[in-house]
Length: 289
Image (cartoon, rainbow, N blue to C red; front, side, top):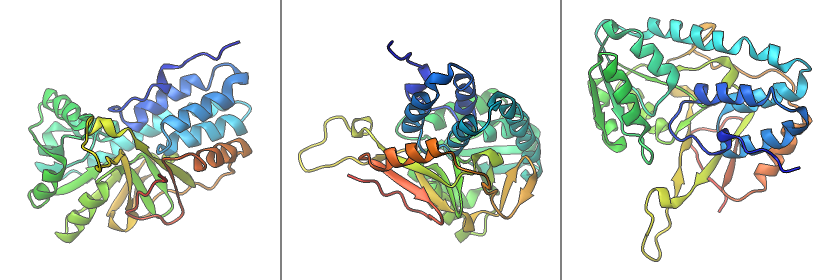
């Protein structure tokens, strides 16, 4: 019998990690016989998202995984409530990419935000989507190119970003997040990362995406390198905002890793274009060619 195709396996390039996680929760409650191939294919598509690795891991280890998933939406809601505490009155907030968690923090507290600075989010423009959403919430937004956002850092009061994964010693997020954090540190700007503890996992991968998304007809001798994600050192983070409150230290994964997850990790590690991120990775994004 041919396997079913799930919409999530067609890569969603503009939604935040929390939104994609909610879609995966629905898939994992499906046919048990399809659990391994579904997890393998989704993790191959979204290898940088710690919450998806953790969801899949729970599905393999827990008999009643669906019950274990029930706490996840409330954890997201708690992060959003905690996020208000990092906003100062009439704050100019610089953010990068489009975190659905950050969007909810800002859109839910427009009276606390004077202006939001964000980059366009090349190559798929998720920053433009964020700018549109925040403007509809009554928030003034300045949109720049991604590189131009670095020039705006001195204009901000704080940096607030999300995370796709929290690996010991590193924040995995949109490529360029590390540069934003280093720039903020250089001028003494506080950096906050808003993410649930469910995004902590011992490892994830950074995958090289099709070069044609950046330049579909490059001249001979020009190789296009298209990375959606990169790593940033947790040393640049003032505080992590999680469902448990604010902490200088990122949440850690302290559980068991299922044998099936280790098998999927080894499968991806053998594939071209995938870079394993584990342990104390900082500001690196190398991939196999």
